[in-house]
Length: 107
Image (cartoon, rainbow, N blue to C red; front, side, top):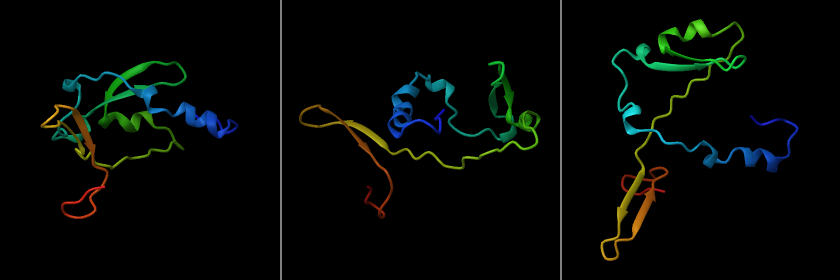
């Protein structure tokens, strides 16, 4: 959490992505959505007690109170990180595609 009274440098320090690195076995990552989307699993963390509950998206309304704000993220994951080896040297390379500029040109 970023506190409003902190300096810009302190806030940026707290947002380093390396703090959020963790191992997640590939078998735990959904490869496609469930046919019945409301059956998707959901973890609920109760901030006051620290309790963790496991539920489903269908139960989401029961966790919301009047005045709560629900923000939806409708972005899609683009498989844009390419890894390989240089043919002559065997050196590892990685290409990260940010956005298409035209049919066959990427930034």
